[in-house]
Amino acid sequence: MAFTSAETRLRGSIDFSAYYETLCALQDSCPFREVVSGARKGRVVVNADRLALSDWHPLLKALQINKSLDYIAFRRYRRRKPTQEERQLWTRCKFGVRGSHPAIAKREVTTKLCRAIADCLTVTSNLTSLELEDISLKIDNVQTLSNGMTRNSSVRTFSLKYCQLGDRCLEVLSKGIRNCCNLVTVDFSGCCLTWKGAKTVAELIKFQSTQRHSQAWKDSLRQKEPNLDKMGGLRRITLCGNLLLGDKGACLLAEALEDDLWLKALDLQQCGISNKGARQLLACLGYKTNLSVLDIRLNPLIDATVRNSILLAVTEDSQAEEAFPWLDLAQEPETLSTSAPTRISVPAKKQRNVSYRGPLRTQYRKRPANGNRSIVTMIGSETTTGATISANTSGTSLYQSTDAKQVNELSQMEAFHREIQRLRVSIELCKDSLAKEIQGRAEAEARIVELEVENSRLKSELMKSYQVEHGQPGQASNGKTVLDDESTLEAVETAIKKFHAFVDLLKANELDHLTQ
Image (cartoon, rainbow, N blue to C red):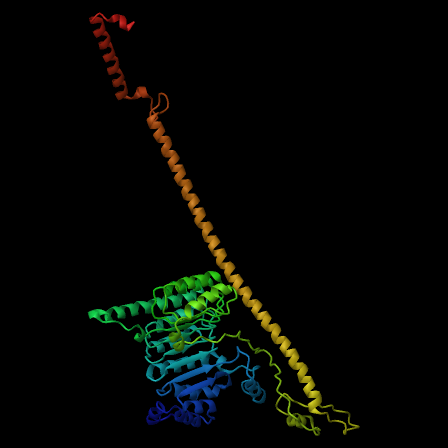
């Protein structure tokens, strides 16, 4: 590939589509139509499953120096049910078929994509929205994005839906976005987060709240009134689809929201929350009036009364609702199989009777590319006239039965996935209960040992004090007899002498009859 001139690169930072087409021409490839048409409007929305390995190089080279785009989105659609148009496209085109492995699934492409986005975040001041959907990111990719977000001052919406981050990657990412005052909305839906991820989000909320309180204190000096709405920082956090978040994660988020005055919306659909976590969130709403959206729908473990109480408490501020609207009810994503391609039916078109003649490879080449293939009955070499069958009759009936079978299989798979998710939530709850029980038992056993030691010590001290005060007959506390003690003998001798002197005194006074 030939190198581009400095002047071309300078123009490419302003005109994305022209530079992208130039890079494609240099490597003798065709520009991607969706990229070119969207770039002219300042938006690049790419279906990553449809890009081949050779298509990524010019796209990433043009992206990493760009300064003009305001919206960048790379999405994969393997986790949701495809639309009718996408089904027809997958059926007629060889690329993007569900049975193939797209280039975005390779770690090399993912790493280059994250580096290009980080470079773009460093140089641009117009980008306001960045979305990565259903792209598997490793911890080094997340670190790259975090470094890019740290150096950016224009992105307001950041979404990593279904990117399978995990708790560790979210912790790395939070260190990069905690100081981004320009960032308003983050979306971590379906990122495999547990209560540890919720703890990271709670720490992020507390960190920004502390910074905002300091800024509000500075603005309140000299009888000024701080404007809380104009302060930068997060206003909406979306954590939908993280089934392992649970009550513990909800309690951590509720604790973080108690002292926060800026967060407006928190979305917790399908997060495995029960009545315990919902009541903690409801108690938080008692003295937090700025939160206008707290979405806990699609959590079947929450009673209707508790859910309605929360929804009623947060829907009072209609003005905030306009700025931060409620999300649509999330649908459970369907994981499309990549091991074997699935037949997709397309509405049958009216066709006339077709007779295939010639060699077998010629017949195969003449067949329609879509799913409405005519059923051909090849008769022996002695007859060739009865080799035609109507496609509207037998073909349609065959695919109707195939559609019914496919719908049945999809419904069974949905029920199976729901059951697996329910069991995962139950297992996680049981693990939390077991951990609490083990901790409680350990504390109880330690307390028992302490009490036994204290009891034995008190018994020994009591015996020693009893021996000192009363003692055994003829024994002292040190184990020697009383007669061996000189001070005791002197005291006894002195007492006897005093007694004899008293008797002599009585006799001298003629009172000796008292001694008898």
